[in-house]
Amino acid sequence: MSPKGDAEGQKTVVSNRRARHDYEILERYETGIVLTGAEVKSLRGGRGSLAEAYARVRGHEIWLEGMHIPPYEQAMDKARWEPIRPRKLLLHRKEIERLIGTTAEKGLALIPLRVYFAHGLAKVELGLARGKRQFEKRQAIAEREHKREMDRESGRRR
Image (tube, rainbow, N blue to C red; front, side, top):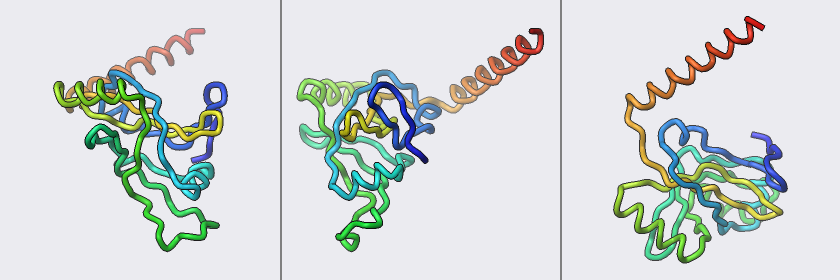
């Protein structure tokens, strides 16, 4: 996946398109992420995957687990490289406390939506999400198809 320009100074590297299908996103948070230098280089090259990633609360910290970052080819320490390892997310204390409360109370999940660079720093867009049921997914697909057909018909009439 090649990096593409988004908003001012942002370049999306990896996005989790499946999350928008499987979850209803209630809130979004911009978080920093703790990475090694070679991991940053690999992400800048547009490599990485959020397919199986999720965020988990441990103590008073939030960790991103299941994110895959392949080895950077020119890295010196490829022998010790762990493509899937827990990575710490950086948030303000009040945001962390709010997330701890909402995920424990309401049974919501923390899902990474995308990884991007903003002004040279790696960021993760974290979503507070509720899982969709199967019929809700089918209904969303049917609505999207209906909207496409309506747009096609209005285009033909012009």
